Length: 271
Image (cartoon, rainbow, N blue to C red):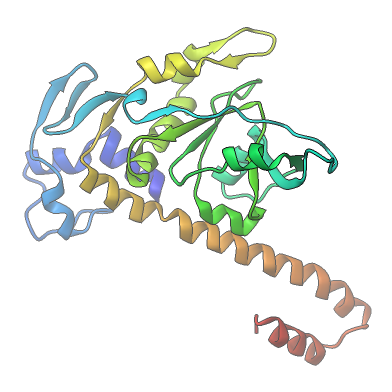
């Protein structure tokens, strides 16, 4: 639903076109747009360097909203006298899985307390896969991901970090635009090298342009995106899958009866 709304609001500008063409009146609803959002959208398009955009919206560079964050670190595979903090270290594939609604098996690594503290991710930060065949895939970070991964989360040296200079809601819109740019091949222009491509993030920040809506529109879109709700549902799915994997073999073998399973679920707070 969020992808469809993103296409309608920020690519096709469907609410604006509906108002321009008289297909929408105050107090009415359109598919995917409740009536109370009527006043958030203008009723005309104006020219810009990216073509026609809604009046009052702006064209901005990625660097207007993000800055390069601290590079990642892979850490040690065991605890040492220096590396005393256990973290889940996100790789590019882990970021992609989380963005697609899957819970990855994120490797455990060990960092020094300063390494771990310096790489704490703020809400609204974006991690981008910076090397390899799929460089350009990204994840919008939310602290709620800790419920899936653990309190200490880091990221590998193959991930590029963008720290927000904007609100988390604006970050959500820009992240969707980055995803769209990856899917349409726009980010390919920022790859360097052939055998093992790397992402030129400074050039992306300086030259990638996006249509940026007012904060009020970004806030409404973030409500529809509802990442925190999605993450909570992922955590519930993992719990239910673990219970299934525990109980099903015992039920099939006869080791456990249905009544016993019901009591087990009640104690687990599921039933």
